[in-house]
Amino acid sequence: MSIVHLLAYDFSLPEIDMRVFKEKIAGKSTIGFVQGFSVSNCYWSKDDIEVSNFITGQYLYDVDLTEEDSCIENFKNYLFRYMKPNSEIELWSIWLGGDDSKHYTIMPRLNNVPSEDVSMVNDEIGYFAEHYFKPVKRGIELSLLSKKDILFVLENTGVCLIIKN
Image (cartoon, rainbow, N blue to C red; front, top):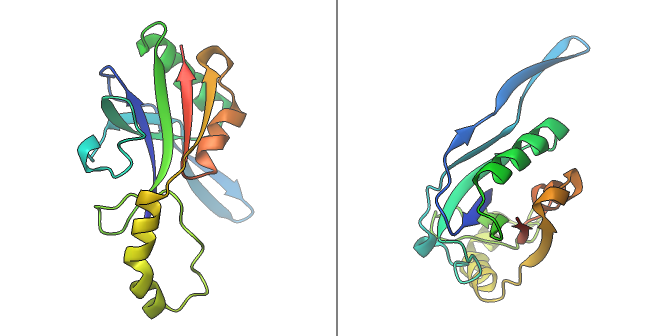
């Protein structure tokens, strides 16, 4: 299972990749990490997503974001440039199930559950996630988009940030 971050919009957006690989020395070790953001055409069709009745945008895009101020500023500039006036774009954080057909949005912690028990309840978890999904939605004006708003999406699942231009 993976957390998927999606942009949903009623108009086509250009793909962009402003991610940069950086290294940081910590003691005697070097740590590598990626900073920035990217927007790319979504691998999954909106018709394939069980939560499509919640996602209102016609076009879906995979989005990678990091919480650095420069990343957020570049992302805001991208949205200012390509969003039409008086429109809204949705930034979603959802779970993508392991079988590539189920998109879980709420997932309990299963660390201490034996794997054979997890296998038995897998379909029930999918049913629960698909039929009882109540996304948490928050709205923000694009000009006020902040690190706190981006962290709302990056640190949670089953959430949607509606950005208004």
